[in-house]
Length: 206
Image (cartoon, rainbow, N blue to C red; front, top):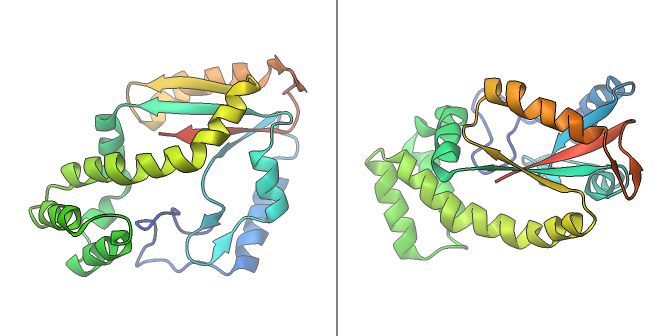
């Protein structure tokens, strides 16, 4: 809908982000198609999606609320996450050196020159697996822990947080192993009542 994956790596040379109005129209159409669904699963991500699109404040608060919802923490090993990211962002891996430098520039306010030089060396040698692993360990994981840690604890205190271990990250495994567990969770009751009608199950990816 936003034609962007939401991170500094999420854009594409082949597509241009739509306007906020177009994004909201697409989102409205997608949500309208789910009106009769017993449950709705959403990924818990940033309020902003790319450079020009963001979620409506009311909708965003609803996603972050506790009423009639459950939160699923999908936990995978570092190696599995690296493999998935390299597949999902394969177009970025082979993009120009100029774009690689733009990413390093975007990270300059968060990391030392020594670490940035180390990352530059990994990319120049084509060792993107090591680069992604270090980016997860030293940038994204600490960032998510700081921003989402209190929220996760809040959901856990309300009995709404459920952790699912993923031995691998693939569509087939998700469809065969994870979806049945999500369907089971979506019909169970919690202290806020049953979660069987038009509710959101937010997925946390770590």
